[in-house]
Image 1 (cartoon, rainbow, N blue to C red):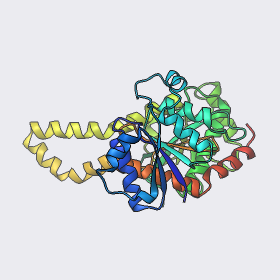
Image 2: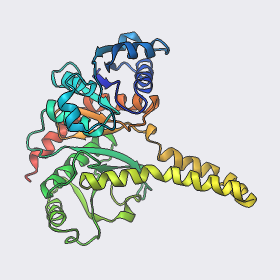
Image 3: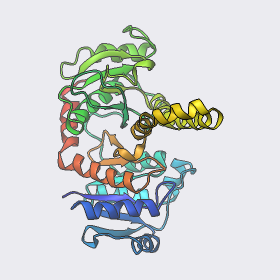
Length: 339
């Protein structure tokens, strides 16, 4: 069973929710976890919950990177930060993967410092699942979007590699036999979006191992045309946060309506089940986090507000990805495609 290092000090609710999530995972699985961070604080939380001590150990790290800190400065100056120490444990073979809900920039930089890039990969990509409407028989209710924050700007070769990596990941983790891959753009025509997107479109159309369906427009993100959608990190991050906000907006509108009108109150009761389903679909705790693809080692980046259930799911996802050899398959696929 893989050993998963968990950044106990990363996230808005650290270390309490992080430690509780690992404790829950220790009772439900045989996964071994290393909680990295302030040992006294971690142990204090463990003392309040049930857990299997055979599956948890603590690796002390005296510092932590805050969510509001400048990532590059924090990673450079805080040598004993939990995210740096956790990444180093993975790089040294003392753990098989790293899970963190901490500062995204610091997570990416720590991995860039410690992890080995897959041969030929130019830039890593954070890949996140999100809910969408399934339009084909057997289609997964979740699609994959990458990059969602590891990069800012990309060139055509980077986007092509993101597509290859995302396709393999969707095959192995989401069990989609032949994922449909789309390129996020402002129009469906192959020449739309400027030289970078046009070049990426032309290259993807010529790769037989990728089921490329062409450009995907904004209104198609929530539909089933593509199982994997590729874009640069700035755009992907904006899209992902927009999706996350949908449930909050729906709940706010419903609450205001209920307070103002009796008929709306009756209507909301009839729609209550549907509203719960919307909230469930957009709740990040239901999913296992965003893997950072492009390295020989694995980081699973959790939402910064992740609670215990989300952390436990992230640990399970990390273990499954390692156990199934997904990163090795990604490396083989990338090297088979010349960019």
